[in-house]
Length: 113
Image (cartoon, rainbow, N blue to C red; front, side, top):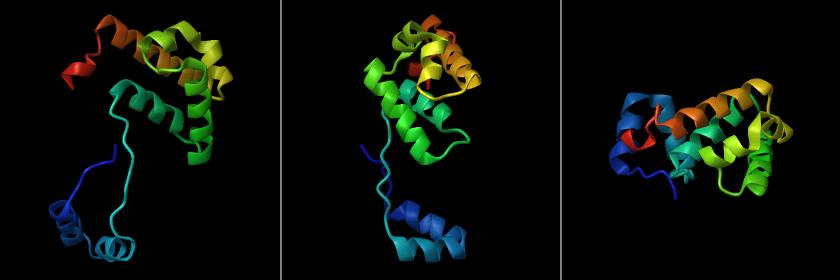
């Protein structure tokens, strides 16, 4: 699934910034994949904070290969030590685990977003 935008959105951006308009004209439409699952998208973005795109992709692939589906249940079953073994810091493992706890308990309502 790709991020959906059209001519209206492109025209708006081009009108807002002359340099951006030049870049848009030069590059054209960008196909950007999106994750339709909000939980895994948040985890993916936490992983990617302050690291290279390539490192993020490697860690994300390790996580998917090991956990299969990345959801609150699989994150909590893995635990912080296993999350760290994928190549993320202790703090990121804590943030992801905390997010999973809040989603699982209903304190953070994914459906309400």
